Image (spheres, helix red, strand yellow):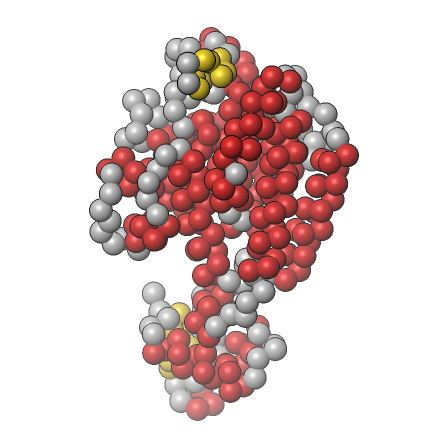
Length: 318
């Protein structure tokens, strides 16, 4: 059974705009060519998704955790970050349409934070705001059927991936299959669904804009809940994704420095190489620039130099 929603002119306009911006970002290789930007965006994603759920750690503290530095903060908050980092390290190994991978991701994300990570709830649950119940989730006895249908929907190849990702995100919030972690799982799995067709979504921190627009995020969920279809939420999320691409295209135009340029090269070249190989990869740079890049790489320990003059070659340092 296909989850209910309606295609509106706004949805069509946003899909067209996003598709154009995906093409532009891919053409410029913005994310792929900038390892620093990739790292920053992953930190932003983790920080934003967890801050929505009340995590108090800053981007700087998350960066320190990533670099194995000591951080002072609530034990629970630090554990949430460590778990999120673990999930993102293996995210590409998960299959977006596999329910067992969805449960595995929840297990990694929530280990040490809930009693039964990776398992659907076995009791009723509702979302309370103030003194009234904002949303009563479906009975736990229906979860196997509801989640099974939702993952069948993900296998529908006639459905646009951009829409499918938004619908899944909403439905996880609506069904509330876990006792805790539903919001972060909905956002994580939307990223994975988008990555299945557009790999650059691995590094697009659209959750930062969700965090900045939390009231609108929850309002879109509430309206969709009351209307019995996810149309309003789809419009909201597509708008967030488009704005994220605007920021990526604006911030990603910065030229790489010598260290970043060499790091990009080394991601694709693991065997020995010469300066000519390096120039062939970055055909827009001069011989002098290539020499400076390689000299800098040796000095900071990224690569090792062998031979002399015409016989000089380099190897990545492990």
